[in-house]
Length: 230
Image 1 (cartoon, rainbow, N blue to C red):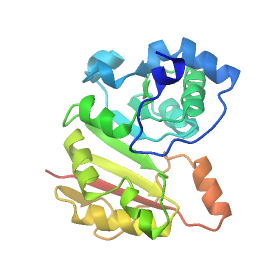
Image 2 (image 1 turned 45 degrees about the horizontal axis):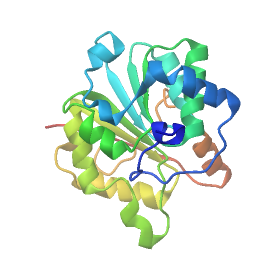
Image 3 (image 1 turned 135 degrees about the vertical axis):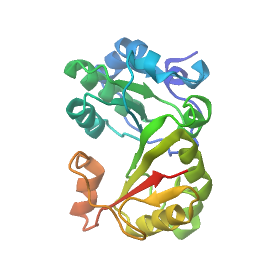
């Protein structure tokens, strides 16, 4: 098996982005992956065994270069974090920064999020699932490729605990409206901010690179939080 295949599999939930893996990122992939890395082929996880403790579990899909996930994990050490990202340099950077910070509350998948959810994450187990600034597929003919769809909402619902919530953020107004429409119609959810209302950005969600870029382009930013009710 090649090194590339070791960390990357067929991707269906995100578009693979090109990027050069730096020497430091590769070293983290080599040295830290055996400690923090997870693979779909290993099957379902038991969080208490994985982290060596019982604690709230937050799963983030598409953490990019990992800066915001590292910040959240550093500031909320009482929580366990699982990150999913297919961009190899981003995985390497997150592993490197997690090692530098001495964090033990992060684990990482470098595979398709749909497969991770289906094969590895137990039902009724997550306190929060985060999806920040996913690919907006802004052309109308590509809207069907957006990850937030009715079927995905129900996949997430199965993985959340009752009272757990799905937290989304986007800087594309049309996608925010799409998210609101899908989630408002989704069975078993309640909008934490009230029907049809976007949530204010919570203090603990860092301003990401994508958010800064969107704001420079004059985009707004919309957060949505939907709680699993049944």
